[in-house]
Length: 131
Image 1 (cartoon, rainbow, N blue to C red):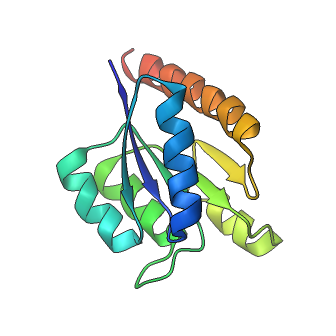
Image 2: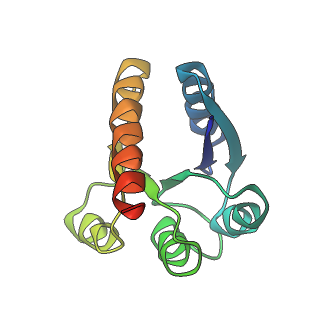
């Protein structure tokens, strides 16, 4: 079964890079959105297994606010992607209980390695939820 991934990134170049790498990892199906609002609309139709979510999204709601809605309304696991490593932002982000945090800049090798860790965490979470 393919892993359904939603990438939410407002920088088109980074979005395309992430999409390309994750598709090439294999056994994945990828959709993209460029704002929290678009992501929440897409979640209703696509129902991803995991959301890769930029913390610093532009638009009405940022990544942390989007994550809170993903938790409360949809119970979908998410992974933060961030280039912003200030203490306050990261602490606020951790309160939403992300599955994982990816730090920018990220290269192809690192993303492949990190995505395998994310897959393992998703698998473990599914096992725990099935008990």
